[in-house]
Image 1 (cartoon, rainbow, N blue to C red):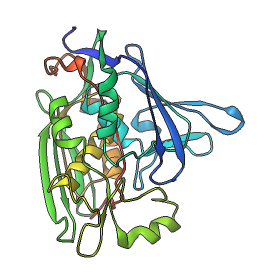
Image 2: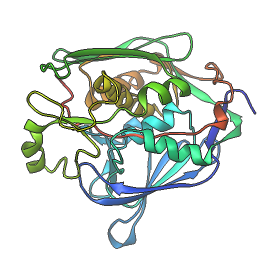
Image 3: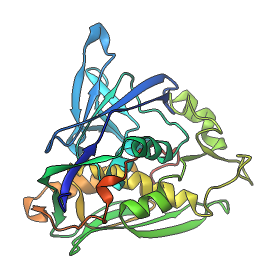
Length: 315
């Protein structure tokens, strides 16, 4: 096995489900891909039998309200990509072709866990080319009101420091810091579910969102209690899910990041904005090879997913 080599899936993975916002059924097929292919979406099922390739890059982002969307609605787009992107990045999958026949990635159980399980079934394949990274060289910061996100230089690896602050005792202020690795992603992040407030449901429906949301795929918060019969998977599941989202959104850098990310009351919009700020100046970053060491045996395990959060980007 090549140290710091690129990886892809050993075989094709297919999953089906409904979009959390569109409510529409979708079939998702994730194919292995060659070295330096990156993560690319193939949007099928368009009018007149058309298909469209969309690279998973921040420059392809067209919307960040409640979920991350790449592509354009008139020519073909894919919504709610963040959980799938999160699992791919969290487990170190560099190259994949993602074929999707509907407008949105399926929500599944609201977390990345079922994608991780699917990738585990086929495993990863080590590839001959060296893995490349985007290394942060200079700090960048974006802000909206009290909310902010920044990226800072770090010698090796990718550290995330995510803090949320909701004006409800059901969530309150939560913070989690992780050094991203496949082990950490599997153990602490992958099964954290998306969440939303029942008070927002009617407004979201009228706006065309959350049409596929249910207690099967969303942690639902009432005025004074969590409505899911099984409760939470972690006491701080809310901030863990925001971490999951951030990993997926920041994977739109196109290559794994070497640096430190910090956000307060952030969300999809700020995650996109901080990448935009990073790539706005070539002096902010460098493309490097082999500076982040994989976990031993990493290429023998498998990959993950991505999903949305209904909570506003700014709290």
